[in-house]
Length: 418
Image (cartoon, rainbow, N blue to C red):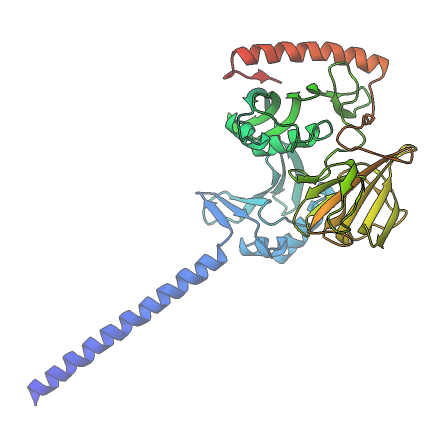
């Protein structure tokens, strides 16, 4: 009996140990899971600092309470941010919060709200428990860098630009600038050279982001296109050619970037649906259904309707001479009606295949003084030219910029401190 009882005790003890181990394991898993949930936003924890990245669904009060602040502090901080820093909401995946303590177990004494690499708000708690707020602007170390490229067989401008080491965001901006003068579907040829002077912003020796495009040059079929960024005496800025004339035209030749031309402007074209020959008074750009259609220039909507030929279409009057028309839309953009004033680049509708159409595309027309003209060749007016005084300053500024470009072209690894 004693032997049997001993065996029974050992068995029971083993079972108890196993059960306890399982229970402890479950508790550990639970703690890990709950801990990961409560700190899902935390990207870094140092001795006295906790950095939290705002996630979707986060609220200021929730993040503050999670760091041990009480409801009175939360109310005060919310009020101070709104009144002194104009911050009423936090942006997911963009804003960060730094919580700073005097010691590991001390309450939060300072909160830094980081809204951009260059702007942040510092909240500090005084001895009386009141929270004070001040805005901090981070100093930028801005440098101008110069990159050159050449179009090779089979290249797109983007491919050649990437090969030249130009960042994607800068390439997109250059594309938009050159689209006023060029058709990137038809005007690209092997051997064409281009260059871009643009800003890079640094802080503490580390690159943070890219700045503005300062100068662009492209060997287009119609001749060299050059554009310079210049800030006028009234504080406004824009892009101008080498003589100080406005480089940005009032209308874009190709409203949709990177769209392939499927049918050119022609006075004698066989219609793909009707089957007989008639004038094609615009240019067709292939794009998938639902692609946003931006206004080629600023103006007022004078027609928003449907007919058998154009399907859903919008017509915009830009000034006393120019109008543009956009046809075969799948639908109109919300808020775009007859009489609506639109800005250049604003979405007015979406690509479709309504009306006489064999597939989704944008049919784009430019009408000058009541007559349809070829969007790819018509001379478009500039938005603005420089006045006499600004023009003199621009020409001096351009000489300085050109001299810097010459030095950088000879030493590509260098940069100009701005």
